[in-house]
Amino acid sequence: MASLITHLVVGERVFAQLRQFGEKEYGAFLLGCVLVDVHGFSDVDRRVTHFVGRLEDDGVDACVKSA
Image (cartoon, rainbow, N blue to C red; front, side, top):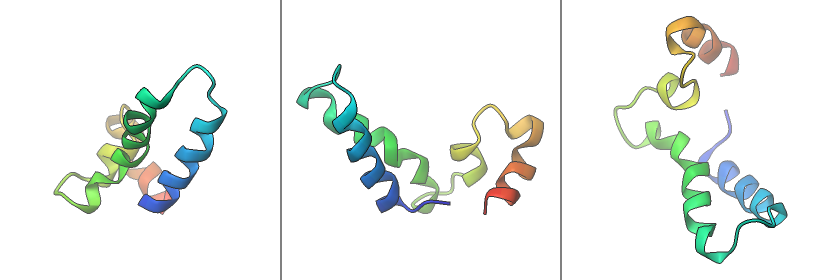
């Protein structure tokens, strides 16, 4: 899985390509890019942050295969 820094760098590069957003949305966009890594700072399970909507179906399997 990508690290927090990787998510941030990719988010910065993607944001630069999104013409419909401006400076006002920049911080919120980057926050959304790194929120998936909240499991590193809390008790939230990584399967919940990375596989929303899939956990009940195949979240454990998807988590194991992505590590």
